[in-house]
Image 1 (cartoon, rainbow, N blue to C red):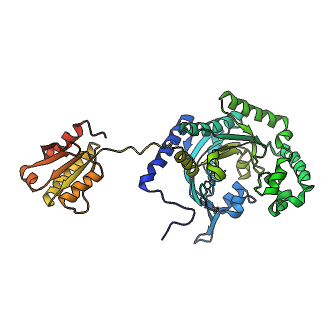
Image 2 (spheres, protein in one colour; image 1 turned 60 degrees about the vertical axis):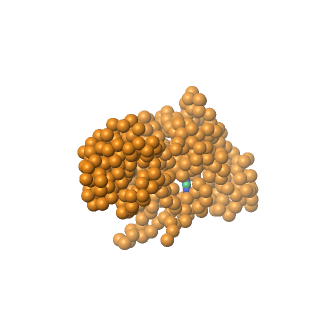
Image 3 (cartoon, rainbow, N blue to C red; image 1 turned 60 degrees about the horizontal axis):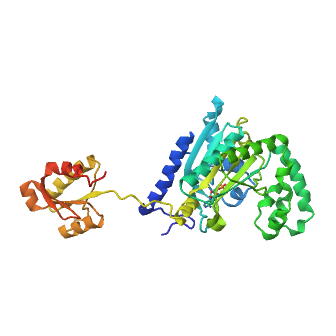
Length: 421
Ligand code: AMP
C-alpha cells in the first residue's frame, strides 16, 4: 500500500523542520496579537460554494467532495477562510463589534495536478483580520507575512500588490475589459471565451500563451479606481514604503469575485520556478455578508508551508535538529531489568532522556545500541551489579567507569554537566 498521489508522510527525522517553521509562526502571531483558530477538516459543500465562489477553479475542478452515509454533501476544506468566517458567524464573534485577528495552521485538500510544490494534501498557515476596514490592517497582514519570511532568512522575495477597487469601480472597469477582449475574441482560449462575460477579470491571469499576450495590453484596473479606493491603495503603499518593504504594483493580480475588494497581494520566491507563489492574500470586505452575516470587512492571506519548506531547504536555512543528550540503560536478567526500569523512571523525572533495550538483546547488542543512539552514559546492570547493589556507569566517550548505588545513579548522572536536559 502506498500513500495516495499528491500526499506525503512526514517522518520523525523530518518533523523538526515543521516544528521549526511552526514555532516561528506561532511566536510571530502571538507578537502581532493573533489568536489561533482550528476548524473542522470537512464542512458542508455549500460553505465552499458560497465562500470561495462557484465559478473558481478550486470549486469547479479541485474539491474533494463526497456524500457521507447520511446523504449529505461534504467537502474536505480546500482553504480555511470560508471555515474561519463560518466559525466567526456561528459563534457570533462579531457581537462585540471589535477587531478579530485569527490565525490557523492546517491541512488543505485540492485535486490539483501534483508536481514539486503542488500537492493534493498540503498545509497552509494563514491569518484573517475581521472587522478592520482601515488600510493599516492591509499593511499589517502584508508586513506579518513579509517579516515571517525575513525571520526565516529568505531573501530576494518579490511582493506584488494591486487594488481591484470595490464593486462600483470594478463594474466600470469590467465594461472596458469586455470591450477590449471582444475585439480580439478569436485569439482567446475556449475557457476565456466562456468566461469573458461572466467573469472578465479572470482572463487577466489565464496561463494560455495567446491570452497572456492579450492580457499585457489590456486596460489596467488601477486607472479605474474611484477616489476612495485610490486613496486606500495609496495608504497601503505608503505604509509599506515607510517600513522599507519594497513592492511591485502588478495590475494583473486580480481575484474574480465580487466579495473581493481593494488590496490583493502575492509574495513570490522566484527560485521555486513554476510554483514560486508562497503567499497569497487580499481584502474580502463583502464575504461575511455574502455568507449571511453582517457587514464586516475582512482581510487575510495564506502561506503554502510545503513551498516555504522547499524554499528554506534550498537555501540551507533550516538549522540542524538539536541532538538531546541521553543515557542508555543496559540491563541483563529480570532483576536487572527491574532495577533498570526504576532508574530510567528516576532519570526521566529529572528530565534526562533515557533509553532501555526493548528487544531482549545481549549485553553486546545493548552496548552497540547505546553507541548508535550516541548516549553519553551507559548504565550497566548485570548479575555482579545486582549482587553489589551498584550499577556500572560508563562514560561512553572517555570509557571512564564508576560504581554507583542504584538509588544514587539518577542524582549522579543528572548532576554531571555533560548531560544537558
Ligand atoms: P491560495 O489559497 O490558492 O491563495 O494559495 C495560497 C498559497 O497556498 C499559495 O501561494 C501556495 O503557496 C499554497 N498552495 C496553494 N495550492 C497548493 C497546492 N496544491 N500544493 C501546495 N501548496 C499550495
